[in-house]
Length: 433
Image (cartoon, rainbow, N blue to C red; front, side):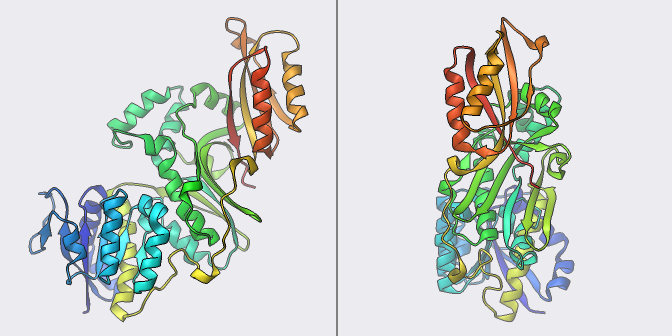
């Protein structure tokens, strides 16, 4: 049976899971593939005693893998930007195919990497970079290839979803974040997770694969969850909504929306039911309608499963001597559209507003007047006398859909009222009809 040789760079969480699943399911994978996959080389900074590397050349320098003539496919699992980019570009120059789980690398440098791979005639596969073990890239690029995709949205960071899930019990953000770090769901520096950067990397890739546009991470809007309070979560629930940290990409005639932020979702919607560290991605196609993909968005063997799926895809091409089977972003380069990312002021949404008002007669009328002046209609309003504290009362308003620029100007005018204290809290709302 023909043999395809793989070099693994990095034996951390994902690298270790990939190595273990490759070893455990070797015969099953070979049966599906029609050839054997042999780990021809492993490189990692720190040797790992828990893995049996008997007979496998080992190095602490990942570039040894990129330069090894005995390697057909380089598997990049070291993470980060610059070293990973140099490693991948070296492998491409040497005519090697690449499989990576590095969403930051693809989101930031993918356009350059794919151009180099196209010129060299090699494959770069990145399924594991988005939503862990959920095969959503394959679904978008292949399963839904007959569809015009207009919306891709969902929970694409399990850490943020876990925190918001736990906060529904009244717990504060900082307390749950510490717990998530203790459980290994969040890094010691959780910025990428809780401020939306990790989700923006993934959303950038999904949008490009779904809409056929260049990768444009630098224009993605990101807003984190650190300002969300148990009060907002409770009152959103009373209004019939659940707060989720979503990535939302929407295709419009003059560009695309590319944004990550806390979002009110109707409690009846499937995305609102996805809790804990799970991910869920909704894709809206013109032929199929709405489909949703849910499952573990991280983890050693779950993500390793997606890495190996890419290895199998690439190995099929290696075994039969063919070139790229599916275009890197799902569209041939000459079919890509030059749609830019729209500024946030141009997006449309409904809005949850929390306003800290003085408990005086006529305040609600003033608030309603400001919103009306900016063409903003109120869907519902909530004010409880039992919540009056030191002469101040929170006012919760849910608006109809308007442009972001309208709500920005309205908030400026609301905050200028003498009856309003502190900043107005704003959370966007989506129905995904």
